[in-house]
Image 1 (cartoon, rainbow, N blue to C red):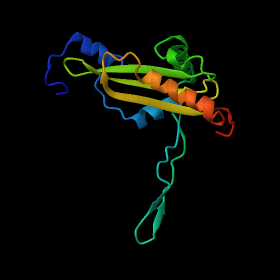
Image 2: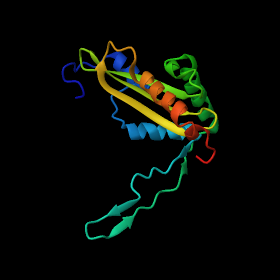
Image 3: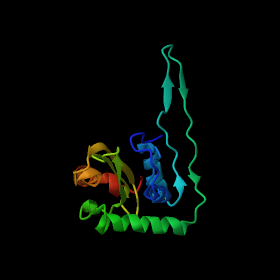
Image 4: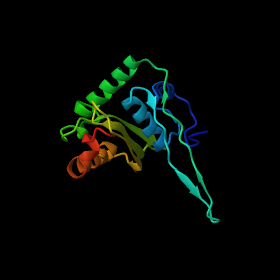
Length: 176
């Protein structure tokens, strides 16, 4: 159903699905929520997109956020995942994010598109600073050339560099 041009199921498809590289549709907001949960050792944040609904007649409804919730996964699991993400940003697939003046933790991914695999979706999910996270981020570059060797880690590097240079208070402020 997902790829009518190549409907054959191969053993490699099973491998990809078993390690989470399948054809599951996940939004950037969902990915950012995952990054935040990992950064906060299993505490799911209240995501509050709309504070007040205003109507033409002047009436309004204030929305009420949910409270943060703890995910029932042992803390040791988050430690292992976070350490792996830190190593990926230090000398792995996300190493474009090393040496920026702030420790970043992240995970990269590439999804090949179509039977000919000439296009890819490149993504990066991560957080910073590593030891006291203030920012979770997701970068998704859709339908880029499969020949592109730069991708989402480079775009994330540009964003982190901008933050470090222009808005350092975002990563140093203990109130966040």
